[in-house]
Length: 189
Image (cartoon, rainbow, N blue to C red):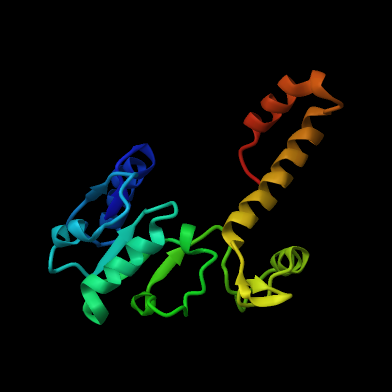
């Protein structure tokens, strides 16, 4: 595991390994990287040689640097990469220098690429925000979207709408009721 050295990274460090162990995996190293770091090569020798996959929780503008340096360090022989799409989200994965990402997996709130079993709601969302089946702008295939971040905003609007309806929100005087209605939600359709 490679994670940012602050609370967000600690959540992954503390909660993911037990779930992985239940699934039969072993975390062989946990490497914390300061959030202000701009070069990562000095951390890569800490990765044990028997590592099959690297789970990274790196976020922010340096993620692309992290991935490129990891590819330079390992070439085509390194462990597979699994982690956030985050800052790679608007990047064309087929860009030169990112060949190391071949075979990697990224989790995201909404898949960049259309899925064979997409729901009607997912298809309507993609049409509404104007992204094609590859996650790029329907108007410009070179303009790769931030689909997962856009999806989070889209979903948040529906959470707010539902809370407003549940609270009977009429205006600023109902703010407390809106907060209470949001806090009372336990699941979303």
